[in-house]
Length: 254
Length: 123
Image (cartoon, rainbow over the protein chains, first blue to last red):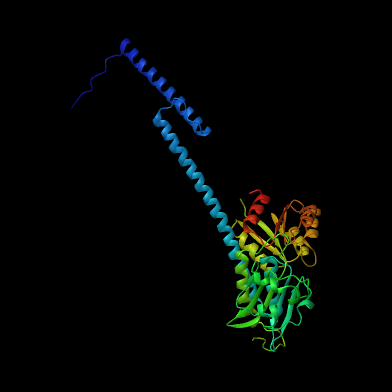
């Protein structure tokens, strides 16, 4: 069993020594605090701390580089988030278009859906829906913002518009082939060329075509997401029209 | 914080569907109306936190509906964002003159719409 040796009473000399060490410690802490404050101020202002040890400046430089890197990462993340938001909006538009086309149970409702898609999702208030009829006619099934008379008498595969209406793929501005589809081809000498021609095709047969003319004033051009919608319309517009035939009409498929 | 309620007013089911899907990414409950007159009625009855209003609609257009919402003491504080194909300056001016808080053009840009919704809701 051990016994603790009692500490001798502190002498005056010992107390002075402790006091001296405490004073040194306080001085050291004060200087450390001043360096830290100067370092923080330097980091915030972007200027090196005068008199700071080289090692400390190196740490500061590394920290600043790391902050720059994190800020760049944050910027990239924000840009990716915005792009993801745009993609989601695009998918929402495609889904809405599909749903509207296939929910339509009557012929008129399919034409309404096509019109809504072109007006609200593509951005044009000038459109024509032509339907292929037995005998080769292209019947004007719907116009919006345009006079139907300009499109009457068109025939499948005849003339530039009749050929484009039966084409294999969507034609969209700035495709130079669209230039030939205005003027005398349709509506008279001064008639504008369409911005897009969407042949409605499913399973190799043509159901008609959607002609899109002037875009909304605030929309300068068709973009990639518009082309996706027009391509969706090409197949699913045809399928929807086929699934909801016009009352009293013969089978209009070619 | 309770979920915010947004009244969507548009005669196009396609647009209502797109708006609903965009707003589903925020913390919002959605109610709908298919023309301006129904929109005014629902704004009065449901007291939503925000209205997204089309302009060209049957029965009552969005400008008139916006004016009526502003004229009614029960609804005048509800922010209204006009969502329209008519992006020309005179139409935008008419929209703000009818009391709209914001203006968004179609085809809808989801980023822009969500930003303006958040701004109007003070979120």
